[in-house]
Length: 57
Image (tube, rainbow, N blue to C red; front, top):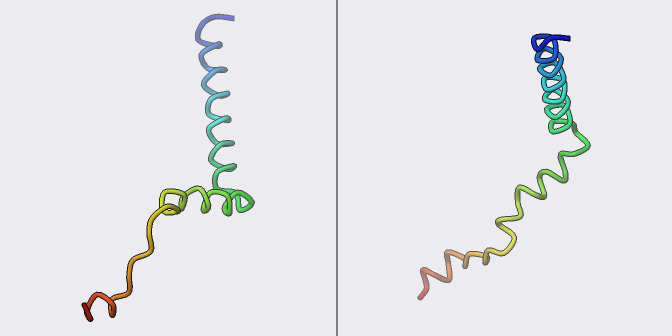
């Protein structure tokens, strides 16, 4: 095998892996865990006070 064939095979393997990762990421069974992970930065934030309490002060 020459270098051109090896490069072509490697390109096909990387492309198939990329398509597999895209399908895995957008599959519906992973949506819940991705949504939970997306909301992690907001887990430690304090709740804002109500607007009425701020206006009365």
